[in-house]
Length: 250
Image 1 (tube, rainbow, N blue to C red):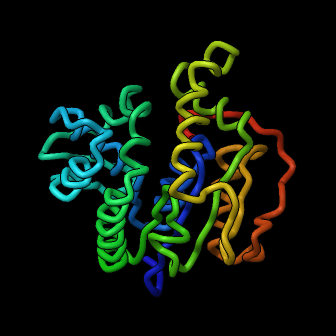
Image 2 (tube, helix red, strand yellow):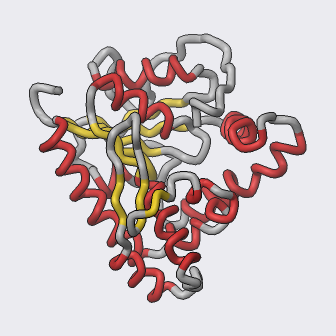
Image 3 (cartoon, rainbow, N blue to C red):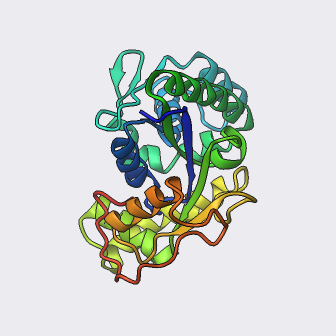
């Protein structure tokens, strides 16, 4: 546990590596882990189960306020439960991935889930000495006062390749085409309410396009430990060719 509580805030687009890297960093440092994107997915699942039209923004916002959500914050068991039901697998299904932007771009929903996210961050700072929290606009809106703020990015080709391999087991033209909408269209929609492609002032930028999973984890740990300057340029490129491992690096 750190000598003083810390929050490591990590933003990034789909397929950049932020989720798996954040888990590994939390595990390495003995911190809690919070996947804020899973919260939006859980709400989308809850609304669809209750046959709430995701285009009905007031109804979806009300559902967000009533959502019986419990987030696991152990990086080795980051469960997501809604009303006692484990929805960890269900919220990763294609039907959720294709529709979650309708929830994530609802400004009233974002206000409610951000409130919950801040509560969870404070809880983890008290219980475990800190938390690695990842998603969209974490570094600028949810936790702008975090001790460490990092924007993890990657080229569109790298992100598509990772997500296609994760979802379809390969990254040939057919799999890339099937994945394109979930990555590119979703990021375009989410970018209307959240900035996650360029680091804001004081946020370190980390491009993982040419990094392995292990190198990406090490780069974040180096930032946290102060081994690299805290500038928008991020850590130096270690120069090792990229080898996609989408099961671990997404």
